[in-house]
Image 1 (tube, rainbow, N blue to C red):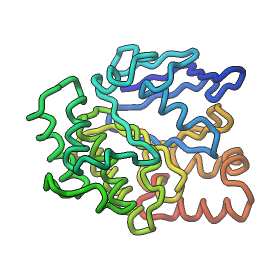
Image 2 (cartoon, helix red, strand yellow):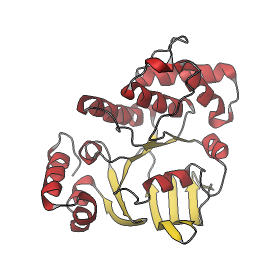
Image 3 (cartoon, rainbow, N blue to C red):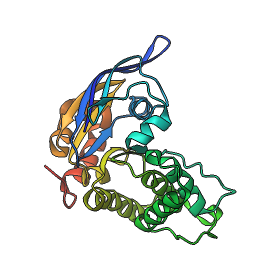
Image 4 (cartoon, helix red, strand yellow):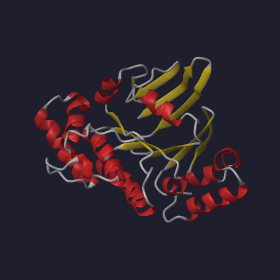
Length: 256
């Protein structure tokens, strides 16, 4: 579905992303991990059109999308969430999602946007009552709202940016399982950026690890978690590495 080749994004003389290449198969959940400043969010911003790449190619469903504007990329079927939810607080929960749906896939129809919003809210478990207010949502509810907005655009590919941030352990497990159901039941391919490695490893099919803007590892969760270079640059100290690896590899359903 997605072919990224030689992707470079520079800010002045600083290369935030340096010659990164990868592919995403249709129906896959790909995990994108790495320490702060490794280039994860920059890649998402390039894929979604917020940034223009300095160099490289991005083929989505066989068409070059590098350098297109965000609304053009959304219309082609790539939706995304953001780390920090920023809803329109004067709008209801329903209208926030319907507004996103209005711009998805070039529909520009109020009726279709509202129907898409109802479906998206049902998937994430938020009320479809048009009177429900954003102010009544906690951290988990705001994360669900972000996800519903992205789903309302009816994407083929979802870029999920730190969907677990600010959630407790129970909420994390439910959010991770929701991403799996979105793939399985809705047929949406997912690239998932996440810092909570143990939870991510239980869900994804494959992992790419970034460090200082470059890809340093790629493979199954088990193989990546045992890669000495990943342990050194991402997990930190040996004690921390052992704790993270145990959570990732011994968690129920973790792919090997």
